[in-house]
Image 1: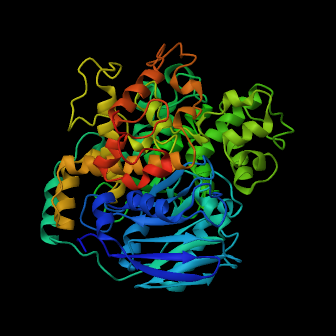
Image 2 (image 1 turned 180 degrees about the vertical axis):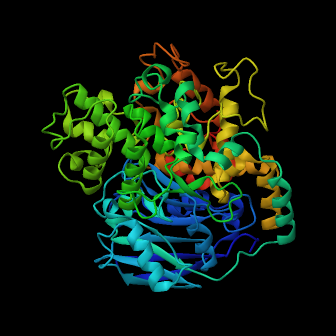
Length: 621
């Protein structure tokens, strides 16, 4: 087995309680690397199309990458995979912290769950031995308390990835939490855990990740760490919250539920950004062996969680700028609620923005909202509503499955205020500022996901971006393809995107080569990324889904265009960009199926029949 891999996977049938250990296939690692690459191959092989996302046939996986738990720059990541109950598509969610490395130290590269347990359970893994344990006493417990309990039981080095009460109640925006504030946040996979009566995966290990050349990997780490630049410096000093003010002013961050302009509607963004945020920080926090340490623990104050995590940029924007809320304390409290109950903060913020706009337009009354009077600039009221959503109480039950479902339940034209793509709430990056995201948000296998990259994010190591600016569509498709292909490799390798962007890009393939013992070049990485992209895409095609039919709220692409600010009058030519991307990908412009030649080039012939692609080119007559 190549370095970087433990070489073992666990498969747990929750219905029967049977646990099976299997060797990790080396060819699969070469082709799909790790993370959601391996996850996609396993779910493709073992899960039938049409499975109910909240039913026993959905498979839920926790998967690491070959660089997880190694000297790689920020090799802390793991990914949760499964069919998304929020979008009906391929689903995955990525998290940092300490759980991913410790899953490998406990003896496994990944663990996959099928079936539904007859009662609440958690999986406990210690140094290569796994067992299901009753979780009745943990069911209903918040994530912070549960993590403390497991460490009391199994020791201070115990790590857990878990759901809170929102996941137990199958909120479609619930997520998986580790380290009291690191979240595998998107795709609603916390609801899948809840449906399976799986409270957590708890790990305790003393092992080590094997490496082909550990000395070289460590030497490369030391060398590359000298070259931190750009946003990496901001991350080191402030965390992601250091970008909040600039994002609001530039048009990157959505304002007033995607209908406003930062300088005009939210000029006080400094109140929830950089220095204001650091003034409330008690100490820095970093994921496993992270040289940046962008996280933080907040000062102890009445009402805050005992260990209150510093809100990330996405949380600050989506629970602040989106509602014109400049009350930092309210955002900290909403963040605490989400971390303890297990809710994606991006989705929570979008739901709150949706609710405010419904309220100010008379769609939701004070009585509907349980006595809460919502308006633009609300702070404390948003905290109260967030807690109702987390508990599924009153109007919170209507809102707890995301803005798409909420709009369907409420009606009265409220769908215009529901900003999502295929059911997934959009994150805090506006395609009018980052045009490539207009394609990413609909055409990636996980809709509404900024972490899948986009052409205009400065990935110029392969093809320089046009000097004429990001609104020049020349070579858009090729550039977008290269950017997203590389990001699939970053996500599959088990490293943090912040490390990839903050340090020289070559740190990825050079350390990957040292760890695994196989030679990787930038072109090798791009080919692996393209293969992963096409397999995730094929998963959706097999489900009968064509991404061209996916809805995206027109506000996100400039319909109608904003009249003020840095992105005033910008309207993204969505159809043009999608068409150019399909050409670069060699996907049919109508069916969106990869060509026979493309599948053969990528070694994906095994998906052809299932998605309706001829196994061989037609014979000329």
